[in-house]
Image (tube, rainbow over all chains, first blue to last red; front, top):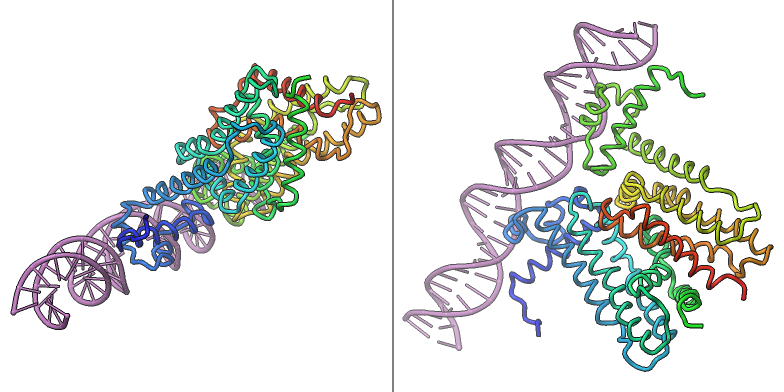
Amino acid sequence: MTVAKTRQERTRDAILDAAAGLFLRNGFLGANMDEIAAVADVSKQTVYAHFHSKEALFLDVVRGLTGVAGDVHQEQVAEPLDDRPIGDYLQEFAELQLTIVMTPRLMQLRRLVIGEVERFPELGRALHALGPQRSINRLSRAFAHYRKLGQIKADDLEAAASFFNWLVMGGPVNDAMLLGDGAILPAQACRSHAQESVRIFLAAFAPR
Amino acid sequence: MTVAKTRQERTRDAILDAAAGLFLRNGFLGANMDEIAAVADVSKQTVYAHFHSKEALFLDVVRGLTGVAGDVHQEQVAEPLDDRPIGDYLQEFAELQLTIVMTPRLMQLRRLVIGEVERFPELGRALHALGPQRSINRLSRAFAHYRKLGQIKADDLEAAASFFNWLVMGGPVNDAMLLGDGAILPAQACRSHAQESVRIFLAAFAPR
DNA sequence: AAACTAGACTGGACCGTCCAGTTTGATTTG
DNA sequence: CAAATCAAACTGGACGGTCCAGTCTAGTTT
């Protein structure tokens, strides 16, 4: 287990935690190192002992957040390779996706990265690869499975996966981006939104 | 016409132009007033004669950009109220939407506003209202028309409009947000993307 | 007379460094 | 086993250097 942490590790985690909060709220330029140190309850010198610059700290923070986000998603979404009908699989996928991705923390991360794309383009690429792209890849693999079973009809599976993904996520994500965390869908609405997305998708991609 | 501008107006426009470029590239905190004055070829004092603070200038710049964006869209998208079949209308709508919205300038504006949503929430609301919401409202009205003609079958027209909108825009917009302006679709790809979006939508919402 | 210029200036924020001392926790020693 | 020792980690606060919003002044253009 990773239970026993050294003092160094605990300090480092405290700094990363404090920095995450302040960067997420204030952006890269809006956050300052004195406050990060204060919130982490650590001297400024210690911050610089662990991270040699504000930029390095920022990169570590954001990479950590995107990595965790990607992993959580990876683990929770069920595999398609059983005998469930495609409709059930898509419904579960959509609901999980909505509840995992549509959290204040992840929406703030997304805003932060988007706002800094000019300054840190690699963060945008990383969030893209671990976020939407990862979901689309998973869906593509599931679709290959369901195509063999004759439950779906499509030439370009990745394109189909992308359409389904944005059918589900497009509205909610973009509302949350522009309207703030208050626009995040309640769990109730997620169900019916997912349901209608699945209906539309299957109307277009189910054989017959 | 608005051809003859006073000196004051010309100066003001030069400042707004320079500020737009720098804010779009560097963000609110990343841009500075000395450079804005220099690029506008104007003294700093003059900048402050026209805008009493950096924040006021920023708000004017962003409101101007979102207003123009909304208007251009408003004017160019054709009215649905003729006897074209719904497929043709949707195809044109989608292609226009893609070419008008997916420009570097508008994507930069979107990134800027998203990055500053915490600091300036009203800008997020404005961009939402004049961007996605406006398109969705237009579509809703068109759908009401087509429903009367029996060319579409849906209970909640606004929900249907939203699904169509994000079927078209979801992937492209979000790619451009995270991957930068290089990820903007070439005109060629817009056509087929729009085509497939229309096919999916009509498979789910055309009667029969 | 109104609008604008050039550039010096103020006050404050903030990154990153420095340094003299203290705490922590493990190891060694009596 | 308890006391002494020790290196690494951390403290707290001062400080240099830079950047920048906003003001001021004295002069120029239209």
